[in-house]
Structures are given as structure tokens and as C-alpha cells.
Length: 178
Image 1: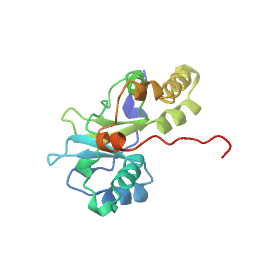
Image 2: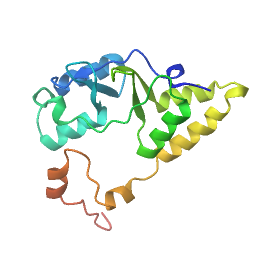
Image 3: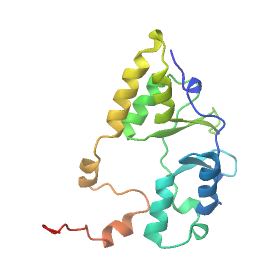
Image 4: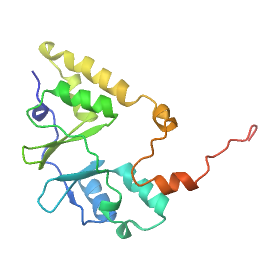
């Protein structure tokens, strides 16, 4: 059985709920990553920020990154896993929630790594004959995560913090012939 800690990226770079988005963007640049777990004062997982979250916050708020606090943008509903979880459990969570990365936390809720699609892809490409199930699991996970979210949007789900923007912004209309 392959465990999460055998594939995850570690150590993990984190930021604080008190940081601003400029600090997080610099962390992402310096550490070549697209996600940073957010920790509270005790170092426990409090949320998560992606590079897309930063872009959308800057766009929708029209403010400079150093003016936007992390805790106003971070995703608070975070799906995480444990280092000793079977990789299949982490894949099932990624599939169900359509997320590309999940923080890995210890028993006290402190981030110890991140498991990403990249980690699964690398492991799948070098899987031995006894681990060929990784390739099938990766393909299934990738297909589930990449499934169009239009059905979710049509059901009325709006990402956290976007309520005002979505309500006041009309959908772009395409004009035939232009």
C-alpha cells in the first residue's frame, strides 16, 4: 500500500493568517509552488491560498497585493489528509472535491507537506509493476478533477468571498460575427 508521505512534497511552505497577498506571492515565486497552506497562531492549518486565489482577489478588489490580507481571501474549507493515509484515500478526496492539491497535516493539525496532482503524476510515471494501480488511480483522479464545474455553478454555488462580485457583474455576452 502506497502512503501519502511517500509521494507528498515536503517540507511545506506556509503563511500566516496575518500576512498579506504580496508576502504569499513572493513565497510562491521563491519556492516554485502554486499553493500555500495558511496557519493560525498555533501553527495549525486554518486555510489555503492558490496562485489563482491571489489573481482573482487582485482583479475583483482592484487593490495592490500588499493591501489585501490573507484571511480575507483564503479558502477556509480545506480538505486535508494525513501522512499515513493510503494514497487512494487522498485521491478519493481530491476527486470528490475537485481539488488539485491537498495539505498533509499531522495529528495536531500542523501542515507537514502537500500532495498534488504533480506528485501523483511523477509517481505514476515511475511506478513498478507492483504499483501499476497508481497509474489507473491518477488517471481517474485527473479526470474527476478536470470535470467541468458548470453544473456546480448552475446549482448556485459561489466561491467564498465572491458573493458581491458575482451578484453585481453581468455575464459577458458574445456577439455573433465579432
